[in-house]
Image 1 (cartoon, rainbow, N blue to C red):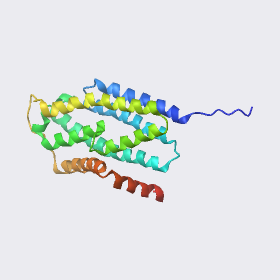
Image 2 (cartoon, rainbow, N blue to C red):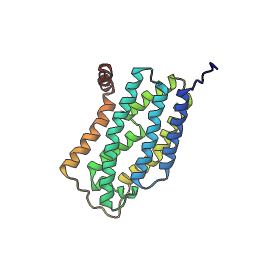
Image 3 (cartoon, rainbow, N blue to C red):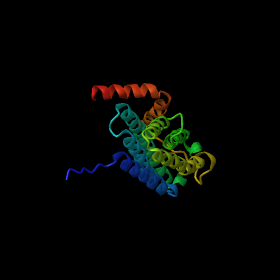
Image 4 (cartoon, one colour):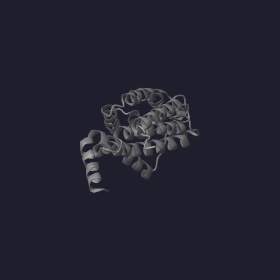
Length: 220
């Protein structure tokens, strides 16, 4: 008696984060259904967030700012990505990635918007997710969770494969049907409202974090 079981929560969460990243990315790797691909990608992103939580251990408020920043970027890019995927799938009559063939000619605005979503999902600059993921990687590394950081980088490289396939289809291939994808004005406005913050949060990372810090300080 008197013996206490001490659980190593950072490493427990770190292992769960690694498994979640790998399951999500490997499931998406050979997926051709665009909505399922994005859904599996969401699982992988949950793993990246868990990496941040594991690194922070709930002890550092500045660390939580990185997690909140990442979640904010993810909200915008996921809403935009699923909306565009739904519009293109309805027009193509199927939900496979091949419905995106030649999208740059059928709807330049949608193609550019989806391209921004995809490079953000990968985590490339100048999108907000690059800044957010970099902060989480630094937190994991400085917390001693080196293996989690390595797996996060590996999974990022892995995700390039299935996102690059869609980019190639949109810009370098021609579809059997080159009909235009028509969007209503409200829907176009919504896509723009979702995509602009993805770039803004990447280009003005410091001001965004300062704003989040002010919210955490005031307890909002």
